[in-house]
Figure 1 (cartoon, rainbow, N blue to C red):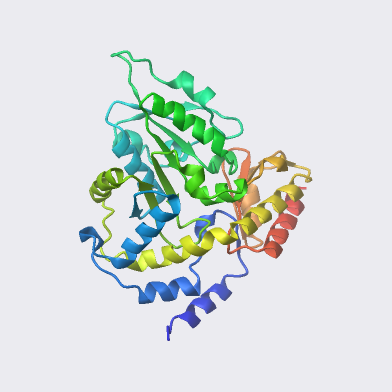
Figure 2: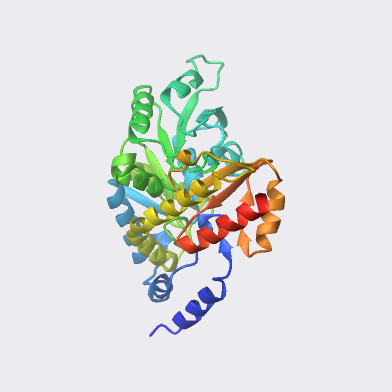
Length: 356
């Protein structure tokens, strides 16, 4: 019998009074995950000998219809591995202006891969080929050449915007015609697939590589995966080692990731329904500017017109509700498996009382 189960359940009970809407990264591993981690069969993954990691990678590749997959500690590492494999120093990477790879990954595309961003602003967060085409470098020897196009689906800082499959396919087809690879930062790609009523394999089939997180909506405590061709993953494994990502007996983490991968996608519709509820209610609130029709996944971003985000954060914290601003006037709420509808209702009431 797994003796830590009771302790885990007691810990979960002790924090129930706090409603944490800062991010879907704050979820706690379930008792089932903790048991799986405790019982995981492990080996040295740098030698390719961890059976649980190998099982997770095979299953991820199968779900995405790819030849291979690689388990990495974080989504940032996964994205930066892909960038390093696809590009070389002195190239440009086309991405949306608010993209995670550009704004939240410590300028690693420049410091590690020697690339610079070439950005376009998509008001709705959905970058299209029409916006990308003018950014492609002409074939002139004294211009830095385009090395990679990167999309983000869902788009975090665009309020969880969902890019439709036909838009992804058009970008990939046109890029491939020009000999350019396309990477998907799919940290929350399962949320996108749920919103679009499709599966992740079909949605992402034309991308050269995809990174997705286990540690966000899927609920695992740690980890992401990169999927692609056998040759791509072979090179990615080398880059992971260079970045210090060889985690040895990582099956302890992969065990929780397997449960997240199999079970997490089945309940994402609940998170997205809760986010839609929050958006619908807050859109009616004086002091908040929000178009609820734009909320399609588990992220709600709105503009405060009557107070600073830091003030709302402070006053919500006094009520044991955690949430943060994401700019001078904008505020973000993210739903996840550790926040139910009743807690969302409580958070909405608190925000309405404070703001109005």
